[in-house]
Image (cartoon, rainbow, N blue to C red; front, side, top):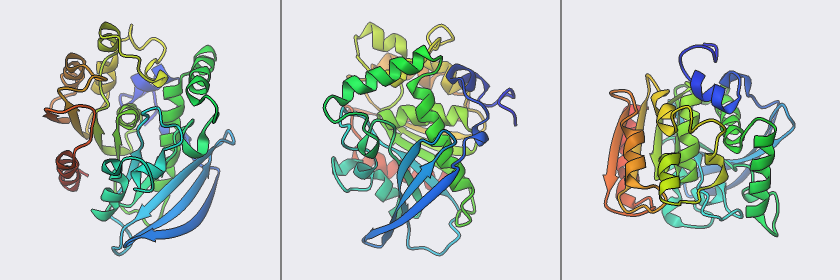
Length: 297
């Protein structure tokens, strides 16, 4: 379906992107790394049409090929520009956020890209936050946004999985915090993503402003506020399923903004799990998400 069709048209227009299927790797390098228990691990280096390299880790389960479905896992922000994909596979950072490893252990081959600015894609080691802001402002001046770049990179990763002969079924996406934010936009943009898990990653620009929450610069998509704010992104996800987890005490995502987005999903799209906690991915929430994916992807 063309980007001018119903699915993804609004978010594609806001981000200034074309058809999701047009974002594909032009070259791929693969290198085997030591396994993590029974989970095989590879480094995958995807190069897009602009010559930009997207380093990924790829975890595959110890089950026969072809696999019936696959996942993309997107990392958090937390101001830890030295960490990205490695945290999600349990090679650094917060062990509770090793959800890519948990996905692979549950039978999902899982591709984990570094978002631009993180880990192997750090813009600066002296002041990575300033470099991120400069990158975001430069993209806005050029008529784009940092969120557009993140979404485009996920589309490149999705294309690689789609073309992978070892994957026989649908593709889903999961992310926490920034990863959840990117998952929301990617689900709205790319209907090849059939299901998604968003942990502590949805809110509205209005709620951020009202509560003086200084979010990461990818949230600030040109014209998003005047086009209906984040609820219009959620409303653009049709015919798929989304599991959203949010903490009632999450200071980064005020509750009213979370509920405004939840209310915007079309009937039957969103399963909402609200927990009395803060900005975290608790073990019980991850367990619920994995069980949900087994049923919905």
